[in-house]
Amino acid sequence: MTMIARWNGHTIARSDDTVVVEGNHYFPGDAVDASVLKPSSTTTFCPWKGTAHYHSLSVADATNIDAAWYYPEPKEAAAQIRDRIAFWKGVEVFEE
Image 1 (cartoon, rainbow, N blue to C red):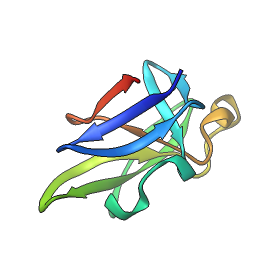
Image 2: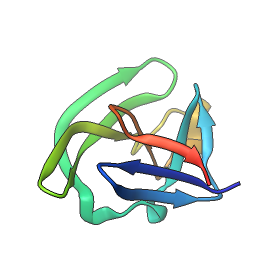
Image 3: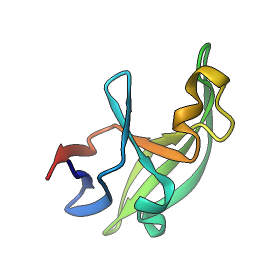
């Protein structure tokens, strides 16, 4: 099953190797269009996954603040999401 993440008319990620955690598809980093990712200083903490870091998305002169997140050093219980990125804030994730 190939999953796609799309926002503002642009395919941001496509992969048949996502990991689903808490209902969110985590895409492999190399399946994400890095040209639309903009660094963010935002972080949040999850007791079992660790510290999440964020990217904003920039597509066609529009910005979606902190719409992508990842765990660069997840806790052991969440090791399967290392080097993976998930999306929210209006990013449509669907099966192709």
